[in-house]
Length: 149
Image 1: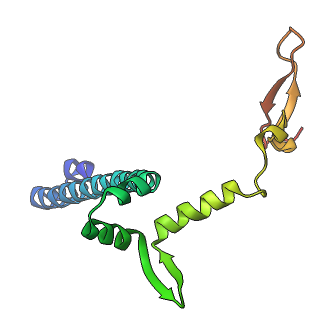
Image 2: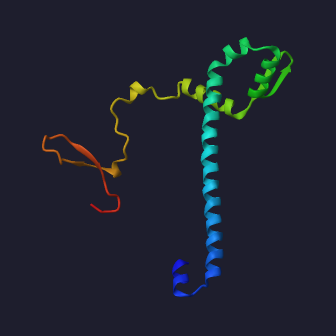
């Protein structure tokens, strides 16, 4: 646009108008990016707070007043019912996710890290053996997958 102004393709008033418009748009975009960055930070902070609450829930609940306990239950549970002497509940999603992850980690389906031993996890197509080192040590380098060998 500046070149168009210098070449005389657009006049001074059009240039100033467009320049102001683009500057305002640039400022709005920068502001929007900053809001997204801040909301990402707040989201992660909330996640950390939820995790910390889950780790100290018993201690916090035992020291709380009746009203605070009610608030804590409302914070964690979406629905709590007493059905024929059995307590039924539905947790709010972040807390349910923590329960699901802990259940999965504590289940026998998880691989025991000591069973992994020294396995190589890189796909065979993306590695090749190279003896660049003269000390007879083998060095694994990624293949260039765009070149045929």
